[in-house]
Amino acid sequence: MSRISQLFRSLTILLLLYGSASAYAGIEAHTFDDRQKEADYKELIEELRCLVCQNQNLASSNAELALDLRQQTYDMIEGGSSKGDVIDYMVTRYGDFVLYRPPFRASTLLLWVGPFIILALAILGLLKYIRGRSKAIEPEISKEDLERAERLLSQNQQD
Amino acid sequence: MKARHLIPLGIFLALTILLGVGLTLDPREVPSPFIDKPAPAFDLPQLHDTALNLTPEDMKGQVWLLNVWASWCVSCRAEHRVVTAFANTHEVNIVGLNYKDKRSDALMWLKQLGNPYVASVSDTKGRTGIDYGVYGVPETFVIDQQGIIRYKQIGPVTQQAIDETILPLILKLKGKTS
Image (spheres, rainbow over the protein chains, first blue to last red):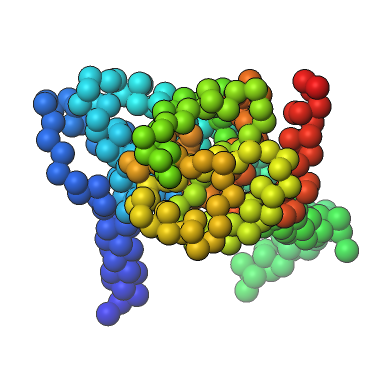
């Protein structure tokens, strides 16, 4: 098997593994009045973090607390609460940390802007490097050398 | 050696320091949004006498601790001795919030290990736990005379936490009004 197809195969496996990691643990049977509520519920449990296993959202966590919070989310959505209501409810209890998408404020400024600052610095560094390199490649040949080269070349043609 | 050759070394050192500091922090300690906010209300039956209810209102006028515990929680067993010793100093009253537990198990647990609480309330469904933002039992709240949460200990109460944080805070809160 060629190297490239091997690479593709491992990439595919990785992708499949990634897909399975975010699979639903939230398999409780909930019935919804309407589609919008169901969509809201699904979106919410994807966006809210489980605080017990911090790198999972409510949808994918099997923790007891995640189960309770899914139930709470379901109860609120079925009871007619909006998505904003549910998010407010969670944030007053667990803080911004419960959100996978934290709000933009002074304390989260670095979090939001930091990557762009690093990107800008990286681009600046890269430009500087490229410029430095093209300058270095430019050959510095003295007048005598050029004349000598021309002499040699014309000699060659005569031969 | 040219100065720019030191750049990778500099980056490496900076990264090492950054990651090193990261190792000393506890990612489980999520800043609680409750600090300096009123303690959420609850009205729950007491563990020992289910006919009696307890609410935070009953504790108004004194500094008190709300200790979230459960018989199934291993770390609660670990902190129990420290909590009991602290209760025996009679510095504060400690109320237990028995979180998602079976009443018989909880009663047995207290019988075996001793009961440091002036009262425990049963939060069988865990709703009050959610209202207090509980995500890892045990958790302990220091609540002042006006019913404001002043501190939250996530995880087991250690002697060090009592000596360095909880007791000084309680003394300070008591000092304010007397």
